[in-house]
Length: 253
Image 1 (cartoon, rainbow, N blue to C red):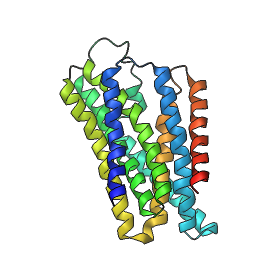
Image 2 (cartoon, rainbow, N blue to C red; image 1 turned 120 degrees about the horizontal axis):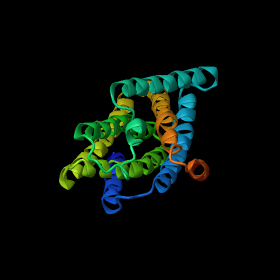
Image 3 (cartoon, helix red, strand yellow; image 1 turned 90 degrees about the horizontal axis):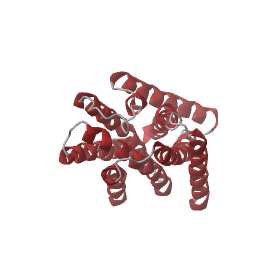
């Protein structure tokens, strides 16, 4: 339980670390941000497949039944995130505003909606980390949590400049950034306790968490890293992240 607690705080704290970097370097280039985000996407992709989807097949009994259970869970996770996207602003549509050159103060309401959207998307990421621990494979769970934490750093960075440019005080900006990380901590415990209480749902929960991560990677992270002209570097950064986690998974296996 202590490992789960520390990991939950680490996953949520990564957003705070990103926010602190955002305060220090307000004009981080899109190219650098995209490379970091793409690397995180590669890590998350490997973590989703190796740490969630494949174990879902195995815990589901393997064979055709296991594949069917995993497929069902993946699509349920993706559909859930799709419904969330219908209810809150799309992350890359709002993040696509070039805040580095946009000198007029955007409306605070729009900025806070952007932050709220990130917080909502953080919940299933936290659940994915918690479900990983619920499977009993601590090493795999730490890989998943590490990938999510890496993704949270540039996410925390990107929300600082918009809020400051909108006239929100530094104190409130930091609090809002920290709250988006707190959502992830809550999600981690939801995933962990849900699986611990009802182990029968483990294969479905693993696949569901994997589906949410795959959806976020495809619908949010990759498109965001391919709109600023640095898509080639972003693609290679994703491959590096994926291969690094693949090697790590083999070594700890």
